[in-house]
Length: 357
Image (cartoon, rainbow, N blue to C red):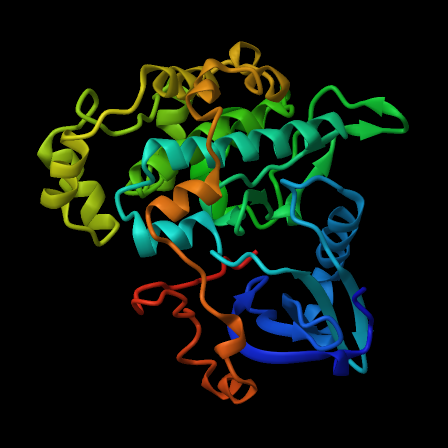
């Protein structure tokens, strides 16, 4: 349905920069169908040595076909520019949604609906022979009905010449922003290497991020974070049973520019289920062999808690709605500086900020 004629797309507003500021993300409308899309645009001469990573991302987006994995409508070159036309994730990423609505993390029901979708997408990737290597809230996108796993730029295969590669060893490219989420065995860079079980650890860090409003190790130096992971330190979901001391929380919230007192009050009065705590603990096991596989997680008891609901229902309960994209006019594109974060809520409180990758 989507063609390679750039004139077929009405570019409405610049949403953000991407790929280390080498590309720009736009909200656009496909004129023939009237459907809104997200378009990444790159000036080819700016890519230089990064063109291989761009090609890898396009390859992965085309190759994967799963409702919980980000897809690609079409990519094409016009003059000296490269375009990726992608489905529009109307709520942005989970990180965006937390900033706008859930500063201290998602309520458990919403978190579990998101987690269920992510595990399904992750199981598909592992079954296809791939490791994601960059699971975090900013790479989990939300549309009207489901969570979709993106951030496929550093996704890699553990199959070689038709056979499984026992272990990988290289640190993912562009991994600086993902260090807090990476498994200990990935960071160790030793002869033992890592497998797809490293994604399970990253998933657990993302669960803590989704539940707490900020990722574990936020206030740690890189050296301290690495040391603590090697020692087997287990991050936790923060609720009445796990709330840290006021001094510890204040230090973390100061690094995140948050209000420690009000956050602690919220954490201290809520309760995550025992099933969710156990899910997180199992995925954070120091030894990868002790972590469950993605396929095993699909039948984890925690998902019985959301058997009869979904993201769409939960967002409706919280009165979270998308903007009328038709109300954004073409001349709004001149306001790109103001729309680096896109207001999308009828109350004017919604911000949308894309991640660099």
